[in-house]
Image 1 (cartoon, one colour):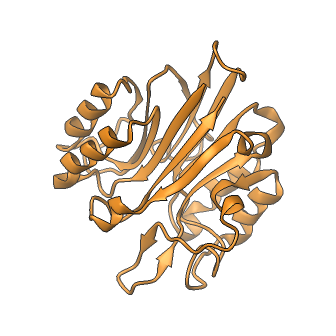
Image 2 (cartoon, rainbow, N blue to C red):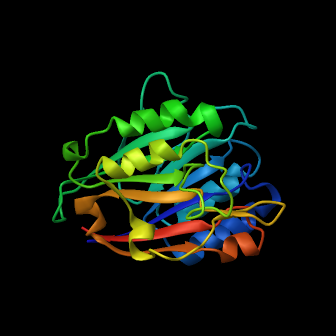
Length: 238
């Protein structure tokens, strides 16, 4: 079974860009979507209608104020949701668990997140660092992690919690894009000064990384100003 996953920070709910975002979702035809900075505001119905028309009718939408940035998950297949930890903002991090009957694997766990910056992201990264990769058959950490390795994932020394990001890699998670693009420099967000940062990631357990057949950034959605972030597309054979 082949599954196409999309993770994308759509910038403050999309606003007037929601129609363009919906058109991109239709063009990509993903099976599972995690959107960061989704908002339960005026633009939400446009995006949700597009997801429903694509058959991504199973959805987790955080209950929040219209101006609150959240993480949402939508999929063609049903899934269960859990919190990362009781002391974390549940609107910013979702653990989606999929169970399969017609695949070579039984389950897929996705830890979808939109991490705060600097010190505020420490408890989120700490929770991820405490995960035991051996507890999961197939598992991914996806989203806007707001972290990385300076001068590999950025043009400046600006990441505050690089040591925790590196701990994830030592703990058995693979930076799936980097593992296939060792010397490449691509950035998913560009500052007003023109400095690039690879904030958006897909980390996989080693066994899961072997199942990834394709992973790449969709920079055109950022270059066309549908968001200030590039999207990331991942294809898995389960």
